Length: 513
Image 1 (spheres, rainbow, N blue to C red):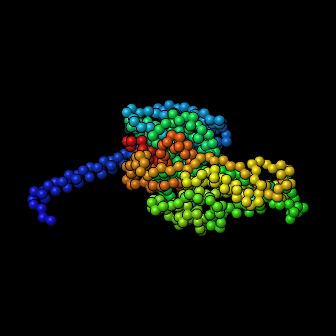
Image 2: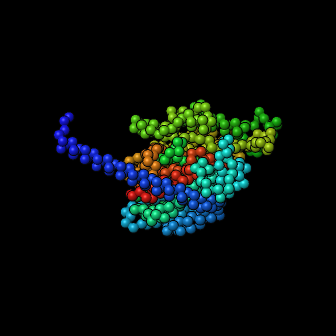
Image 3: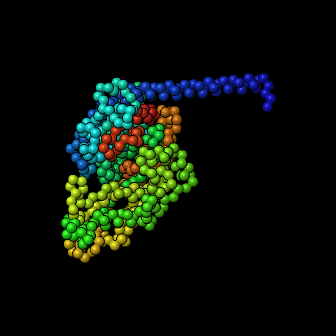
């Protein structure tokens, strides 16, 4: 193509203007990123006493007096940052609602935070108490060396705080409070109103949350919901998760003699309930982990678009297996992301007789299994529980919901007690929803790259009551390290994730909606 002089000159001028604008925009983004990095680093260090203080309050939901201390702490923390707080009553411990309005705001963002934690087995923690946070650094041999808290002046990303709920989920609470302080220091005010709902019974399945949301629908009214909870993708890159499985639980008990019997006197005579329970549980799955109960997976299908979305998540299957130290995986799905799109049936605990130093030569009186069923949108929770119950009946059991009577024991060869509870259903939000696009923009601004987008996490959070009652979309913004030992002894939070979590929340608080 031939250009005359005038045309060539015009194009050259246009190119110069374009390049100048591009450089200006790039420079502006770089300055924004640098400022966010500076703020997040500063407030990560300055807020460590706040994190330590919060983690020092015991938060096992089975102890209401301890939970009350957490509620009071949160009331003070949010009121000191300009929020109005209000307790939403339930039959047990309340939810806590904090809200702050901003001038010219047209929309409201509801934020979900969890404050309670799993029970603690103190014998398996490598420190005096799970509620006395300890700061540790890697010693180069795969072990951890405790350091004094005053050493945080040399803040290192690979240092870790060890305490119950460090990651799940008081860490994100401290991140959010630090981000509020950071933006306030810059006189930055969001262009949307903020409501924060705090849950103190999440680890119990949030049994009263659905009713509380219905009863307080007007107070909780918002345009979208953000959940600050959970671990990032295994690559530890910025992540957005657009759904989560729901959860139901089952307690299943089988019976032998009415009281434990001497295994010499009654072995080969009295049926062993532990063996019966083992066979019953084994009948529910095949050798590669697939549930064999007819209809359990009905309604779930992975179409081409869903497959594309799932495959885009940069999982390293070999690395996952190495971290779990397993040679092979169950075959519900052919890869990790596919597997968690299906409902699951999991034995989370078993009990019968005694073991270790208390073991004795007896035939136990009973055997019990605690089961969780992870739910997906395509499956009806009540139908799944009914399928499991009917399967047990088909194995020759009389199924009841209580301890059997003497007459029932004498007239039925096999008896099982089956009780269940549906905690909450699954939820899922479109990637291209308003909240999805807004959060993607905020994280890209902060980190200079698109976040990893996950269709649905395998874990469960009590979000569906908000989604269904308030009719709003919800997205989880996970921030903690995946190897955090959540729900287990020696739970921890990597300080690099703490800093980047604050950075993430600063970006969200400063992104216009």
